[in-house]
Length: 102
Image 1: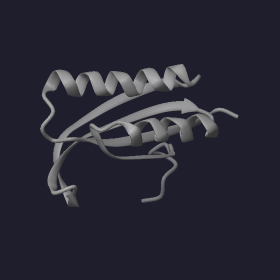
Image 2: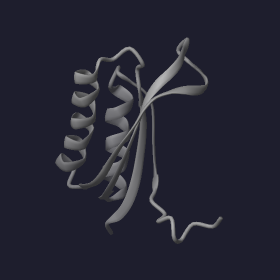
Image 3: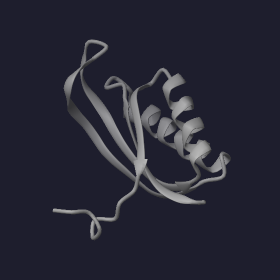
Image 4: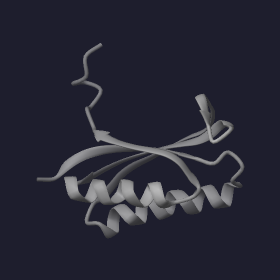
């Protein structure tokens, strides 16, 4: 069953714009390679972290809304964890704003 997901990941703060674009494109390509479909990519930019991760206080946030299946999501998260430029990654089932509670 195809489900819509949101995958958010935080990139190292010291990456230049070209490298950030490459990492986002790589993640999007992984989704496609695993049989998913990218619906939307939101670049949130550099933001302060709630707590330090590896002695870093900032990170570059990206959200990708995509469709796929459960096993594909596990493989995507595994690949993101193995990527040294990614500090953290999380995938959750997408809930449209009109269906979420206030």
